Length: 138
Image (cartoon, rainbow, N blue to C red):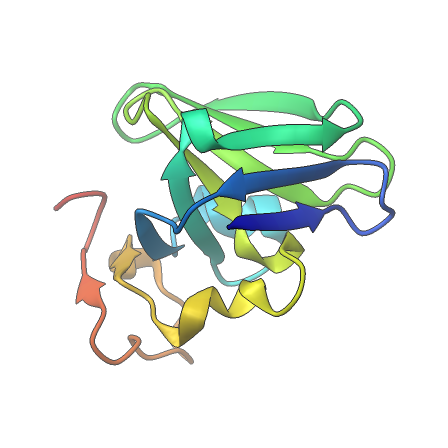
């Protein structure tokens, strides 16, 4: 099984095979700033199962709370957030679920974990059944 996605303008397309190893929301300030929203929703997949199938994303790096690099990939034309590769998690890609096709943005209706709940905006509550982490892994 393959899940496909793209940016808003269609210049960048990507896909991953198999099921995500995790589904996660991240409420950190970096993710809020990057998306212009309250959090990112992520399908965490093995890097070996992920591939860009059309176009070449642009990147920018930010140093995360771990002191390691978070490499963000985005479309240079429309600005869509596409995916992140975290130096602290070298074997996975965090695909931004909003770009997934065919209803896959819902992440199967289940969020496994929420990170940086200390930064969650006050008008949101935790997702029922999701592990709540004040920081990353904390």
